[in-house]
Image (cartoon, rainbow, N blue to C red; front, side):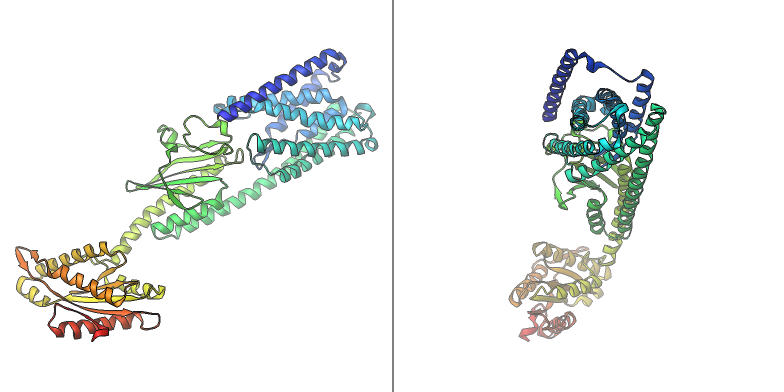
Length: 558
């Protein structure tokens, strides 16, 4: 903000200097004050200028008013001074009344001097070149004599457009593509010149009729351009948002839902930086939308009131931001779109986007984005329920380990991913039928539950290990990147985790042992997942059970 305050002060100082110079010039040359327009005609032409200024076409953050046709008509028929005066009055009215009340004064203080100065340059430089090349004005105007001067006029306009673009890029840090700006300026001034020329045909009959003809033709061209641009843009935006909603609706799980939104957001709205906060079950995660990475807490919304958190926040220029916006960004970030809170069920989402282009976002963008985030919240909540059902379908309720279905899925995945060497450890409880027959099935279930806890405790120390209840009193471990010796050592750890500490259940102190069979696949295509599982089972019964139980056997050592 400090930088733009300096720019505004400099702009006002330069404007005051220009006003002083112009005042001094008019005092020195009083004939320049001759105003060939009657009061009624001047008011009518000013009304046309204001009409075109408020009914503008926005492209790439720049407002095109097409008032140039009316200004050019005034210049060709009445001279440079009336065109400048009426244009400046129009800018003053537009600058003060075209923006929302909360930013009106800021925009006026920061932009008015710059807009006035550029308007003077846009009018004076091309017009002076036109006059210097012998261009006719007033009643002496002829098309043949105006052809060459108008070529100079248009070339000067393009030059001034380029200078303006460089100025706003380097001084105001507004991101404008100068080639696009010059191309659009060529279109605007080309249409304006055509309309001004057509209006001159009617000048001898009535000046107001001539001005009205120019205005009507300009309005027609502007409406065609505006309607085409709005229609195409609306159709493209609607399709992009519909595709994003469809991607969300077919998402099943939480990670898939979040990834879908992060992938689609950069294609929905342009932005330089963007962050999205997702809070669910009292856990908040903030993502950088560009990099898809998790970042620290973003302090943007912390200073906002509860009322402000309920509505989107839209700013078009950096100096529109209030003191509420507490975030460090480069000086060239101007537009901001923030949706502080979208809530559904137990999911709360906030998003903020910044852009280098001025006035890059509007209420339509905010509404579309808010609707998309509401769908995201609902789908994310649904995904939690889906995941819970999915997890329950793959989890053994008694031991809280994975079930056989999950084990087969994981085994197929690990063998397909070729995480060799892969080891399988299959084990079961020795004499478990005796436990059930002697102490009852309730005690047997408690033994299985305690065994599950001990395996989960080992799994925390060995994160790559996948543990599952295979069925009944049988359990299985799948360990990627685990050679034969390491697999045998791990199997022994499991055996001692059961053997060394008695199972105390229902007041009974039980000494439980297990027998284990191990198989290791060292390289691809050596054995399939199912074949390796059969060999581990063979090692369990031949090398474990038949050797007196409470031991570990590897298939390769049988």
